[in-house]
Length: 113
Image (cartoon, rainbow, N blue to C red; front, top):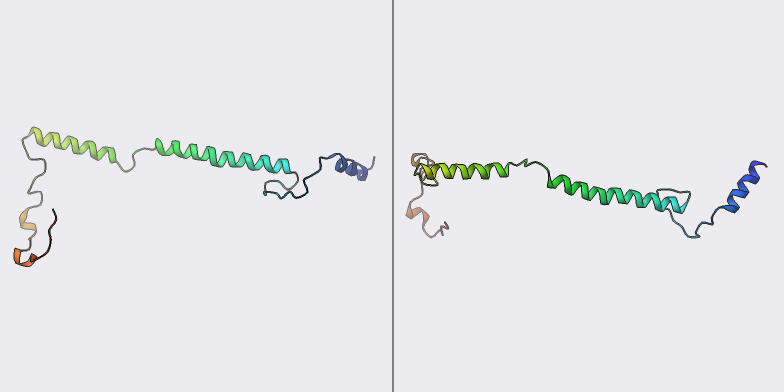
């Protein structure tokens, strides 16, 4: 059998391709390979990617140390309470280091505390 007849036999026995098939770009030879490759890649990229990213974000360490400073604040409040000190020191910044405007300078400004 000559190579030309082998090629004709392969073409005649192959499943007929759909008339208006447009490839998704994953395989240009057969529609079945194109669909299988597209579905496999989308599965891994979307499903596994979303699940993996969600898992990673859920169990990522506390890089902003949010839990640490909240625990530290509770420890400091408990220490100040045990020593009989106020929760926040009113003289945290010494009054000599800043000056407040007088009542005349404030005039009609609304002060929201």
